[in-house]
Image (cartoon, rainbow, N blue to C red; front, side, top):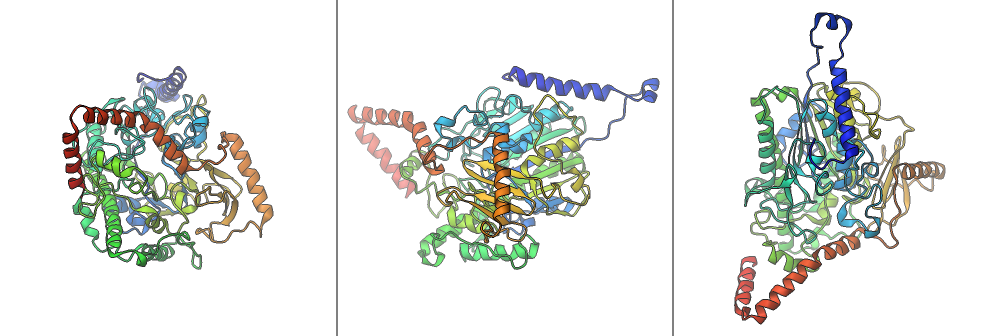
Length: 604
């Protein structure tokens, strides 16, 4: 058991292991008489591939522009979900994905970057996996699986909270919301470094790399540490694609030259039409389109249009680069003779990212001092702090409304592909499924035994529908709630109530029939007040059950992010001011001015 485990969690994990050994060691009378070991069915290897901020239609199998032949192959050979929902932010989604519990019950109600100080250390808001909660890695390790991880973690800091303390035998983990894809450095002022850890200890990172290749190479090395077939493995690949900074090798980005020159209105219209063709949007259903204050593509200057179009070329290139890395992982498993016995899960943590980090106050100086630029030449390459922005995010979210941060469909309706042994090929599953369903599904395929000592999972195993069973995953009267930083929704049957908070939302509840109107264009609150009232009661019960805490008055995510970033940077700014004062007072002015001029020339 790794150093740093809490006594409670150590007892839980030990209990799981003991139960597994006891059940595995028990045999029927005939086997007991013969002395033979009880037969155990072959257990699949499991690979979970989590994209960051990828929209519902970004992958090729879902009609996306990026070329993703390897993931498309998994979709053809397995099941593609069209009614899958997750949370609108990364940490809550990852907590639910890895535990099968609601984000508040798991311990990660929101993300630390937007957490109000007065809510810190409250139950559910400690932003770490709670001690009594078991991850899928812990459950599977107790069943004899090797447990491996590479990528973004963002689920707690320090001993016991990093992957090595949460059931992973080997791990290379980024303990932050994101980082540069070309070098070990931070991507925003909230962070003073890019904190990479291997097996719980600070990692010695190469000076340059590309994140998707680095993570797949590392995961492959971990897999190769044991002979093929010696024991099953669970591998969690948490990609940085396509989180800010949006970066990709030019050989991928250049393949999309001119693809997005028509602008975001053209892209959203094209995706909406493809959504109808693919059955993601019912015939006759509408979409809300863009926010009222979205910029008109034709009103941009030619230079602005070139910059915006190139940012999307890099975005598509980043997805293709990730798919190519996944292809190399699949090829390695095939070479080991293990591909056919590997269950793959491919999904995203939330909808597309709208933020523009470059034009925030003070970012020019921060970028200069951290080696970043934002210019057309080399956009997406090393040193480029690229992003796609709000209008492209709204286009990518089609046919849904809004994007990441919000619980409208554009923020939480995401792709999910499950493929491998035990999954009927060519399946399309349209019913409502949720991120908490992944862990019980994997535990079911692996034959993991129940753990009464641990909190019961909120999710439902998808194994029956993956194997061809008819019918929905949930009953028409089973409510399903989600809440992150005040943005909240509850599903029941074909209906959904949703509350989006400022700046885009107004905090009011609305009612939609998302089976017929997934674009959330027709608010039914006035037409069906009885249904709205009943579903609001369901939501109140959900809040009470999972422990949703009220937000402080006047809270907005943007204001809190700014305040938290400033608080983190005060010591750094003070130290910088002291250094400058020393230079100026000690005769170093000319050297300082020369360095400043050189950096300006490099950034020009």
